[in-house]
Amino acid sequence: MLDRSKADFRPPAPYPAAVRPGLFKLLVRLKRNPLECWSADFFREPIAKVRLPFTDAFLINDPSAVKRVLMDNSTNYPKDPIQRRILAAGLADGLLSVEGARWEAQRRALAPLFSRRTVSHFVEAMLAVGGQFADKWSKLGSGARIDVAAEMALLTLNTLAFTIFSDGIGGDFEEFRLAMNAYFGVIGRIGALDLLGVPQYVPRPGHRRLRRTMAYFEGVIDDIIEIRRRRLARLDEGEGPNDLLTLLLRSLDPSTGRQLSLAEVKSNILTFLSAGHETTANALTWSIYLLSQSPQWWARVREEAERELDGPIDGLPDRLVVTKAVIEEALRLYPPIAAVSRSAEKGDRLGEVDIKRGSLIVIAPYVLHRHQGLWSRPDIFDPSRFMPDARGSIPRFAYMPFGVGPRICIGAAFALQEAAIVLAVLVRRFDMRLAQNAEIWPQQRITLRPANGLPMDIVERARG
Ligand code: HEM
Image (cartoon, rainbow, N blue to C red):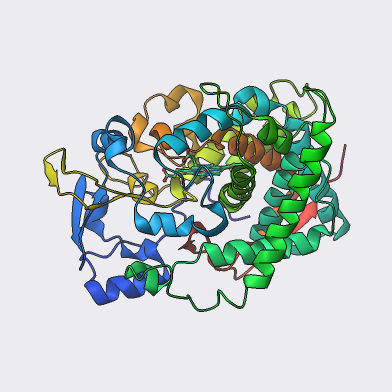
């Protein structure tokens, strides 16, 4: 590990250009890495306007304007067409994509699935998945090189598969995983045609080729749901596998007593797999990277893991205080969802700025979390910001890796719990060193990930 104990550590990130790029450069950078589009003024201005060929766009960094868009006046700001495009295909009926009364009904029905109480029942499953990966790494031998980014993607997928379908997926998990990666690779891709507003009925290159994979993947999900539905029909309430699929099939909208349709159950399974997989994997990947560059925080996380992991399972996530501070700081510097966007249905006023109907509103946690007016030493890794004695001084609408307002991430508690448990398990068991010559660079590709993965050399510690 590098000794950075004395120096401030500025983790890798583009240095914002002094001037804004012109339209052509903007499009090139958007395609290559949208993080490179933000010039220095965006990190200083409370609200910055960008003229696009088809509309005006505004980047919002003023916490009270963020609150107005995402919370107080959120009905005026539905998700915009580009954001919808990311969520299209199999996710169309799921919580991420639906709007209005349908969204309200689904959110009410799904809220109990992700309550703190339900999520706390998954501590054991998360410990088990972390342990399985540690055992797998242990077999690779001392000094083995692994791509932590790829491993975390697999791990978070396993956790979801385990917590959604606790009795397995009824087939070859590896085949399922490959099909799933291909599936989400297709539906999440945004090309120039989308940015230019070309309608969805115009075929996108590559889609036809992957249609069979997508059909296979959806078929597997359909079968699992159908088998479980028949099984639950034979059982009493309260019986059956204790997992998210059972909860989904039994969930009722508390206001109307209506059950989710099978299409909604399926869309929400796809939504959880998609929204909960890469995001949490990136949170873990960046946390491990940042820790590997900071021996003192690594030591503090390990000390906490050694003290707490052998204690009672009850309340374990709440006792991983340092571990969570590191994860929250990783989510500040590298928010997996680097930007969310909305479109203004009617005109509005945000701070000093008039917003015309149809304007594109962008709230970019990546910029907000590094804004010079909101943070001290914004580019420096410092988890102490999130320790209990300091956490309260962070303005509520200046930090939002999970979004805010009614559409805040429903899986936030699940993700934070999983990340804390897995990080603690892995740091306790392994020393990890960044591979020599590794080039770590953040790239926004739907989620914010290290462009070349995270190659690390791992050594298992002797167990006492
Ligand atoms: C570190 C991990 C995660 C991050 C950073 C994250 C981030 C976000 C963000 C920023 C939003 C709001 C998007 C917007 O306002 O446009 C969101 C929504 C959502 N997330 Fe997450 N998420 C994570 C993990 C998860 C997990 C584990 C699940 C489920 C298993 C999940 C399911 C969802 C769903 C269903 C929504 C839509 C909520 C709604 O519209 O009512 N997320 N997430």
